[in-house]
Image 1 (cartoon, one colour):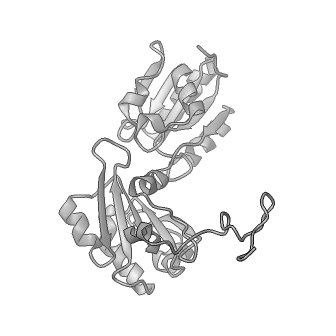
Image 2 (image 1 turned 135 degrees about the vertical axis):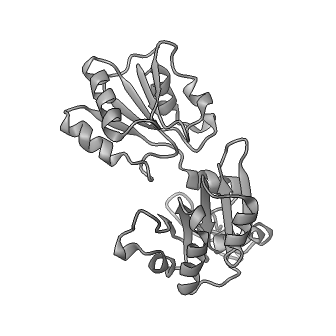
Image 3 (image 1 turned 90 degrees about the vertical axis):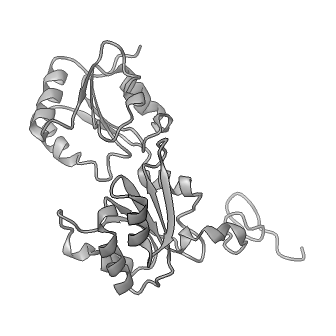
Length: 265
């Protein structure tokens, strides 16, 4: 058993599979005195690895101030706190507001990164999101719903880059997504893939096109806990073609670790 420093550890639990937490995150969870976790999204199998004497609490019924008060009280009593979030805390984790209050209270905290659902979804699809000659950029964003987005980050403007786009928290706004992408000049046959509850036992995958996105999500009954990935990097036929090789492993490409060999040499 490892004794942790008395502070708040904001831990990314990964997308769902209890084995997809980092080793560091797992060690903190197993040794923390207080575990406060997002019970609607974090796997109970993972939380069950907390030490038997740990106080384990669900955060869904608490407001921000209640959560921070619990964490501050614990740390001041010399206890360590694992504040466990789904995926990676840096993406839509609502951690900044916690850090602001913790700092105001003089309570130390540390962030432990986790596997984001965007990368778990790409793995489930067997996809590379940055494909040579197709796109070298991935935009991580969400469609505008009840929570507004900054004026310069409207989905139509972001989609105008025609790169891979990953949409969090947007399954209920599929019709709006389609309108914005088409307005940005995307073709109706652009490949789109949706992964619901990536890495969970009930994971569901829908492969579709931009034109059929809304109807296919409706038919699949997907309204939440889903990642939408759009762009030609999501074309499942890419694995049947040998047309998008990187320069890194091209035998004619010279770099710091290998001298390239020209054709005919």
